Length: 223
Image (cartoon, rainbow, N blue to C red; front, side, top):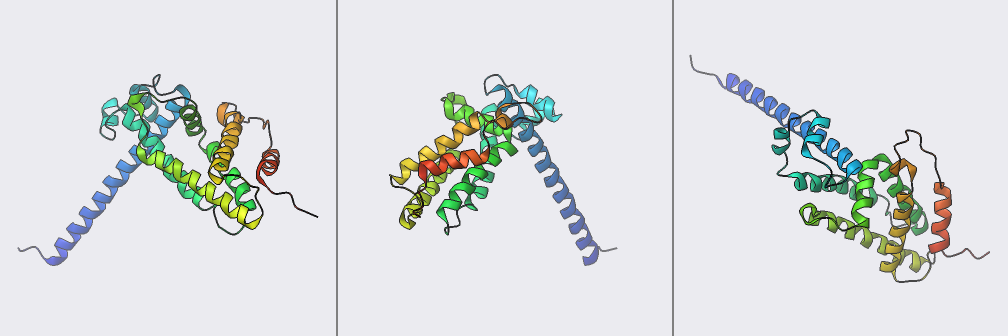
């Protein structure tokens, strides 16, 4: 008996669902491996981490890791690509263009909050920014571009703030780097990032950090 168009359509639909399930399973597996890699790399560093440790934490075989990532340094770069994309998408929402002083504070809150949400990634960034990475762990150019784009957005924030009289004078590109340095210094001593304590104390409240940022960049209000 000839196969009807209805039968063919049902087979196509069933095949499409199977393919969707396969792709979803692949995506979940890749996410598990990236989560495990972020944990181990953040805790131990690039050189001290082995793919065996990552695979065991994710409950995969080492061979399975190679089905998703070409090498250890590829896995390392993909951590930065994933979180970097999330960071850029979130930080973009901070720059509304209507109130530079509020944006300045929102940016501080976002960056500190992002590292607290992903503390092992925070440790990786702090480690990467404080010392040159080995040649076999070079970060993908897209990550470097993301960092530079973040600095450009901050510089534009300072330009707008200076034009409105809310933020003080100075080269906007330099001020953007100084702001990044202040936030990075805070993060490097933030127990929520650098400590394994499940309920870490707050050594310097965010309100105090805001006051430091205000003194550094905000034009005092004239009564």
